[in-house]
Image (cartoon, rainbow, N blue to C red; front, top):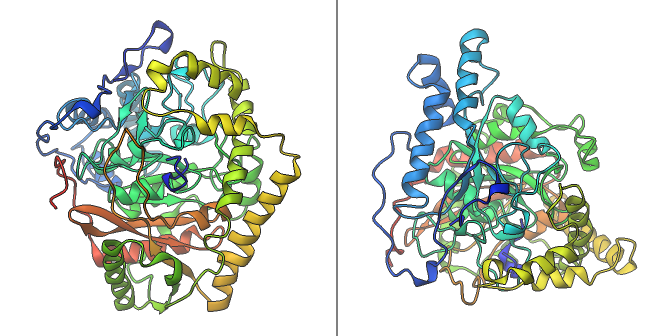
Length: 541
């Protein structure tokens, strides 16, 4: 879930205890490969939207069963073979049967809603009580049964979605090492950017972003603590929505920190992401944070899809902190600002956030404290055979270093284990500082001062090279202030630098997903910049 800017950013056979899920064998020795294989041929369902799939099923051109089979074939062609994207860890062995049953239900009763029969991939830190694993990419949790579905997985099943499988991720949501490579996990190997295979997919929702971009599914679900939805979405030229904290229950999602964690939708279009968002919201007694969403969430966010939605909207540009760090990104965001102006938005430039950069240390302290506390609670709920505590997990990794520690270590685990309880004054002070700096004196003060509807910024710089030796290179990201505040953000494709994707982010006050979706959709419709990936070996520099 966490972003690499804090430097935490072949499934080798299932054991008998690892269930009957289809393991997608992916080689992990990426560092020794010199040339990727040629890209796969064009795909029949390239860039098809949820609405398009539903229309096809209504006309009898597709069935849900056929769609599941087509996407499984696509995954088999490009995930462990062809360009070897390594975006999917496993396929749900019951997916086709579930889709077949949904076809029978459609015939008998009609569709449940817009997600009926739609194939969805889930990040591998989202628990499902079925034949699939729920491991955060780590061998340590293979074979460990979860007590129940994550709330969001249960909601998707109720909506008629077909959970097609689990996606690769930065292991433990990129909160294990200061030298991690985004998109690498022990189970999945190194996920690769579909636009240039030697470039990072970013993380930690790497596989979800790449799967959507490469048309391995209709839509996917990721999770974020700081940047882990919006950054990989930007790097794979898709739409990602990081909701307000508490809009989607975290129950059953392997945690980093309850003060920042959230799941969120990822799609090739704003409409698809908005459709998926509405299916996952709701108050859940297992996650007290969702109580705040009562009366505020919408079960249909597509009502905000207005191509003229930017007209009269006041958008602030925090130029002092977010410009001058990525020249190629700056050029693209300047072009995006012109599109926004042309669509009738009032651009307030500059509209600087005075507190940016002043709470990085406190954020990190909070994450360390909460990771230990929250992960211990999660692990305690698993079945026998799994590490029961963070301390047990550290020992397990040390005993299985050949699988888990061959590229980077577990320094963040060790640092978190050294923290005290959540009653420590140091933790309480750090959390209070975060909320003051990111909320009260940050986004809230800026939006009040300039009377803004939203803030816009470059999502992050173009993706850098994969480096399993040194880990992620430094790069610009605008995710932190909304992440620490627990406020929503939406990223949309803003163009390409040497063929490498860059996104624009819209963020604002809590529970304003509708406003942000309206702005993002109007920008998307005016710009239409997404180009599907070609799986090039390297960027055309």
